[in-house]
Length: 420
Ligand code: UD1
Image (cartoon, rainbow, N blue to C red; front, side, top):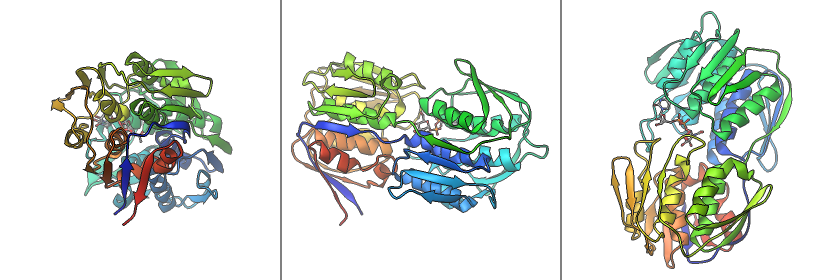
């Protein structure tokens, strides 16, 4: 099984170019199913979750041509599309549920596996299903599959989500684009990836407007165009490398981004003592030996992202005192804590709160990655300590970080992949 070996304590210096966003690409790829016109998508990240979505679309009958370097594709969903998404593909990636909305919108029926359990929490899809039923969808759950159909087609409606969910907002936006009449979605997630999905759909000809901070109006329209779309940057990848620079007293220029999208992260890092210079499409992050302790809560955008919580925790282990992180999105997202404590961290978890003692010098160790963002937090901790650390089970990491060891090597890290 592949592992990563890291010998830390090197200051990271140089440029890191941020890839396209995984979490924007996934709903955009799923949304191609609503159209019979050719679609080209560029700036896809070369990561496992995108491959899985491409497998899933191909299993549904999509005709997909990948570019040589795999980061742009042409999709033709004009004919022979099936409406059955199997367990084997949806179980490995929760975002597989995002094909439900588009299949129902175009064909009025779908059989989609429920996503499997997930290490970071139960992650149900009740909010998706309840909202879809308001558009006229009837469904049953049998043997782990959602059997859904809309006998009279999807009908526009006013829907207020019972909780803010990124995936449910995306599924419903896509479903409503082809529905009859007008749909109003209230209490929507407003993550930048959702705005990117809306930009993509609008370019295709869908009629979608923001009519309030968390309210979207969609007028059904089946007259769609052939388009070429460039996916936004990955803000979580950008945040991860910002923290890598901060942790190693480094000096990284992080390029190919739109800084205002990550204002919250920039302001929090500045507040704890990290120097950040902001330019139009890049930032320079200069690490400091003096990091100040703080209290952070994760929350839906524009709050601090849960997907950067583990990474920030590593940095706070270096702060000048006790910090606190409250995880408000997922109920079991502190699995990195046990491994960080094995490296010498002093973190105590009580419910959804972690108390993090500062002034920690990590020890190197052999480690086990548990989920995507937890894995990268172990790399960050390893980069900040002298000895050799080994990180096992890195398939989690490959789901969401493009060529991470190559990007880190380029800025001076001593990190290598070992396939033995
Ligand atoms: C997306 C992101 C993920 C990120 C998360 C929160 C993608 C592919 N993934 O995941 O990286 O961590 O947003 O920013 O974009 N919930 C329910 N019922 C539902 C749906 C969600 O109870 O039907 C709960 C979840 O268990 C979780 C919370 O709502 O506790 C938020 O989940 P949601 O925003 O839906 O996350 P995802 O779309 O799965």
